[in-house]
Length: 125
Image: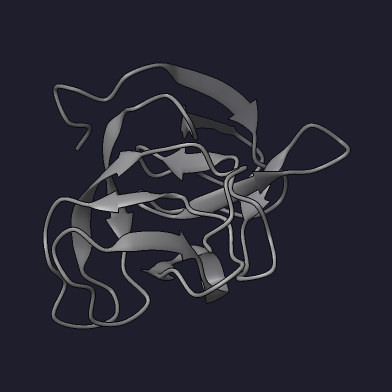
């Protein structure tokens, strides 16, 4: 379910794969969104489940939107987050691009937590 303060949401093709709400995505050269990995700069976060070969609603990085994001592991309240495997978010490590800030803690992988999206072009120190 989208949050009340979900900021700018844009629609993009998501190709042959379904993408669940809360997944971090990157934008491909073909202008489709796919789940991001820990080596990617995040384009945004899926705000509602998207079926294969459909349109995905994306809260764009840098928008300041507050969205639900799937945690890759335990996350502390206030942690800077980065893209991780399978479109999840993890606590940012040195030199990685920040996706946003955790507004809630996550106890384990798979938890959906509120995150405020920041500028993902800013790497951590």
